[in-house]
Image (cartoon, rainbow, N blue to C red):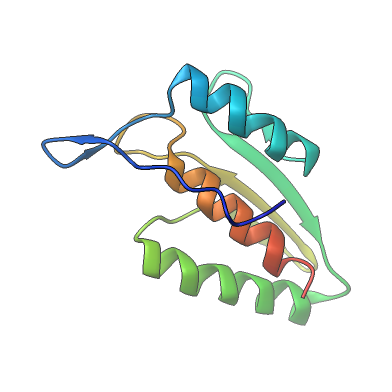
Length: 113
């Protein structure tokens, strides 16, 4: 998956907008191909990552945390030893936004470092 996905995040009075139907049709198949799944009963995406050990998992989480801070967009995540489970959704719009797509793409890139 490429990080060259460019989309303008439209806003009304500074509010983040949920993905349009057209954006979903274009972007979600790419995430599904990268093993992200849509959360049943919620407008969110989820993926589980398995690493060699806790140190690799924690390093991955640290890289994601730094990017999340830069974006001011934070994942919901859970970690036990070498496993990291991540759910992405944008609380400000009550569902998926371009921020989730951008962060998911970044997460996939740093998961293989």
